[in-house]
Picture 1 (cartoon, rainbow, N blue to C red):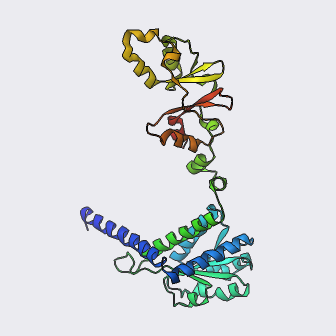
Picture 2 (cartoon, rainbow, N blue to C red):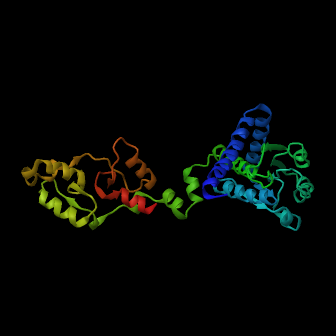
Picture 3 (cartoon, helix red, strand yellow):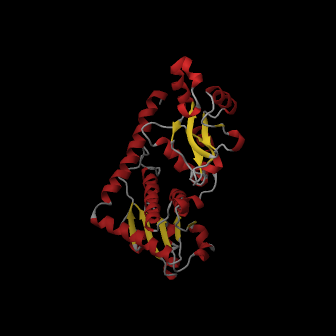
Length: 330
């Protein structure tokens, strides 16, 4: 297969896996499947609210998917751990408590290693939720709730390698995790506490004061300053804007765009004072605002802005926030 022929194959795989998710969503809108899903979510919620956790388990590709689901549950506020069935049979079952709930993944529902764990789960009195493609399986017969994850065909051209089925299982795990997140009131602040690192952590934790230009780095002039003074300090500071202040109180801002518009007056330009060129009552932010919210303030408007003066409750200037600095920080 040459490079030109391979693209249709890629498209075929994506369409098949996407269709498997769409087909499942349609099934779950029907009464019987919806009832089972609701019961599964209820069992998980009840366990978490009772101080328990979600034990996620599976073998092979289902085990890999189970590990990802457990990680997503934890990151969205639902305490979950992954137990490999083999390790469970050799001591890891000590993690399981009666208040827990088990989420068992097996597409066939007849995975031997997984089935051998069921008596131990039952003896501990834990609720059992199954996720797989065979509602008539041995696993399904012992579950308190069954999440239907069957697919018509794997994307594998030989219908052998788990592809469509694992993609669907991942999507259902996401749906379960996010449903529990909403039911349990896990908000963006809680999410930030679980994600302190990397770009995501910075977006969730950074405040304006962490990113803004401040102190001597900011160009500041008075309302009577000349255009020559404005241009000199703007060139020195290189922030793209000059704050116009009366004492410490912000009264306006002069952006590079304001300067270009004022230059249309040609010979009159150098006769202007800062107060005549500035944008009065500009959009501002405050030091404690979340940086992500400030970015939204800049972008979610008919005409986007690249800078925000930073002021305190009294309207006194504290710094200057630039879109460039936000993008660089994130």
